[in-house]
Amino acid sequence: MEYSKTAEAIAEAIASKRGQDVVLVDVREASSVASEFVVVTANSDVHMGTLCNEAEDALDKLGVSYTREGQNSSMWRLIDAGDVLVHVFSSKGREFYNLDRIWGDRPAKRLENID
Image 1: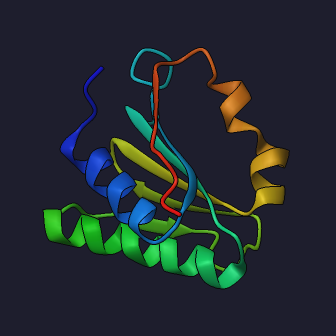
Image 2: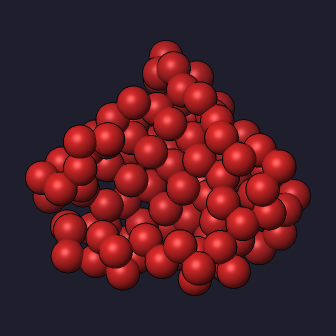
Image 3: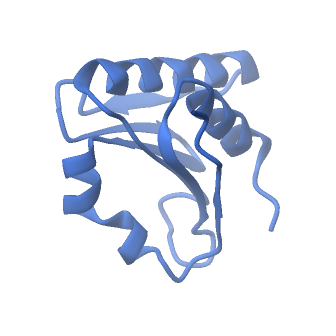
């Protein structure tokens, strides 16, 4: 399974900032909202902000426009880059929204944690 340059760049950028459990999910066949998800867990509110900023920097470098939602949420922040949606969760938010289970039947690529 090949992922878009955009999804790969975002995933690598957030992994470089110690994003935990980074997963790319191909939802092309199952969603009319997006083609790919990038899902990551942050370890604090500050870390959530850092990961969002890093994803946005990657999108800026690629010239991809985006919007950000949930800026003040401590559970889930979303960056909508058209075909790619970036879900930045706290541990509690990832468990609560459980996208890994909801989209668990879709092809996915898990990045190794950088420790």
